[in-house]
Amino acid sequence: MAKLLNSGNYKTRKGEKYGWKTYGIHLAPYNLSGKNVCASASAGCSAACLNTAGRGSMHSVQDARVKKTRRFFEDRDGFLSQLFKEIKSSIKSAAKKELKSCFRLNLTSDILWERIVVKDFPEVQFYDYTKHLKRFVRFLEGKLPSNYHLTYSRDETTPDTLIKSLCASGGNVAVVFRGKLPKTWLGIEVIDGDDSDLRFEDGNGKIVGLVEKGKAKDDDTGFVVEL
Image (cartoon, rainbow, N blue to C red; front, side):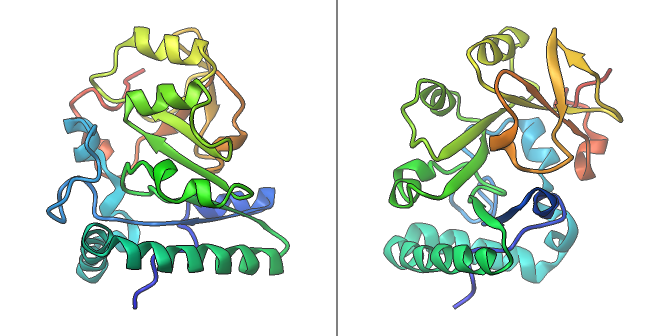
């Protein structure tokens, strides 16, 4: 049985210098598997997805992600049983390396894990980016498990007024910029989201700045902010 969790990519491994080991799941984004796991994704978000970055460009990797996604929908009990075992094993593995473990289950998806897994591991740190606005508002209102941190992802359809409102409410919004990061944007402090992937340590009310990568370099939808 193929593993569900991976032990990080180039971005998530940066957290190790801060004492954290990130484990995550790569599913087939959008409806590539026949099931849509990114229901709120915009055209720009879909086009700029990092699904094919690195090893993701390999056919075998894409095929494995599709199979994993289909199993999530078609054999939910088996999928979760294996995931629970892998989470427990990953926690022990990180501890042996004197690292704290954290989990980003939506590396290339936007599933509401708070309803499925997070609540079963209250002592473990989970985090994700999300495009589901109502979900993010529930997070800001304290209606999600306290061990689950969410960062809202801006796309070309997101009004500036919404970004300001979310940040004023204590939320953080991830924004992709062209070439470099500004110190502030819309009057809000911009922090370097590429330094590590540990979004739960960013503080509150910040713009999480990301420099465009991969397919996003060809974006002309407005998903990438031009300075």
